[in-house]
Length: 425
Image 1 (cartoon, rainbow, N blue to C red):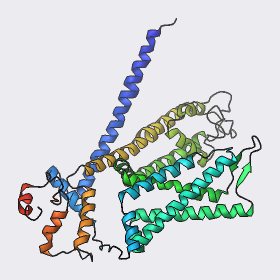
Image 2 (tube, rainbow, N blue to C red):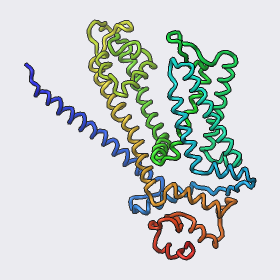
Image 3 (cartoon, one colour):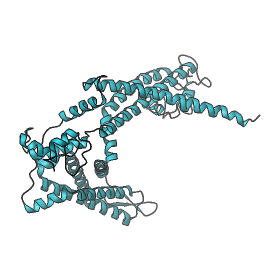
Image 4 (cartoon, rainbow, N blue to C red):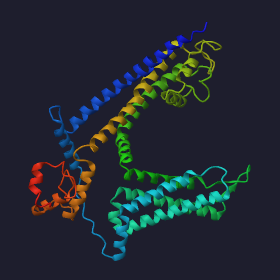
């Protein structure tokens, strides 16, 4: 009665039906989403299908330039000690040293565990306090060297200052609790070890320090691209999430009316059921991930050991096989295959756009460099420079926006090279 070769039937079905047909279904969704979003972006940016690739790139670059604004030139401090601090905090070595400190701080925070010995916990606490002092000194050095106006004009500095403030508040709360006898260590009843027992508020403030890891994304190009993709995707993800929420609300109301009184089984139980709107929403959220949705469907199809009358009591009613099959399969298709893959499509689309923008002739880094050089010629941020200083501006800019002598000018047109070759020698 055993024929192992019959297993090939199921293997072929899984390959064709699951891997091929299902991914083809997902691919259609992604393709249509990409096509619609591309048409919408072209209409919003004033582009059309008759434009060439270079013309579209020019329009996108021009749109990005219009969002930029001139900034007043930062005047370096005249005091010798402030100038010394300025040279330190603006160096690349200082940035990498702080990134190393962030990674070490996160490592020590990850070493915390239950039933730590007193010596190990004291080591962790001392390390965390030391890192808090180091980052506080860093913020103070930058604030003194740059001045409050220049310091807080940079969003990353504002983020660092907020994290440092939260860290200091958490440190003061921990010290206060320790002085009052509520903090410190607590002996373990089992092994004589100790565990961190700070209050929930102090723990939350201490955990927020891990957000410093986001600074690493600023220095590493690949991480920065992924981080920018996440930020850009948030509005679109909110739209898809809102649509998913509406779908779940509709199905939750249907589920309460169809399966609210069904008796408990293996999967429909006190943790997962349709007796209330809230529990139905939680059950649907779990099903949207694909977790045991078919088991929930089988319990909703119950037809034995239950009351089939219309006036049955709560928890004693039978299910409806037909309604259960239609309800759960349609939700799985709409909620799992369509909505979740739409979320993936949004992230992939924005990641693709980020990579395309990074590969363009004029990148975000080029525009940022232009803004820094422009500040030297327009210290008062008037958006105007004298015509006779234009050549000097071009010579200080790196390609493709300028002809810096030490850079590769292959991206610059031959005409521009001939026009400014004497000035930029």
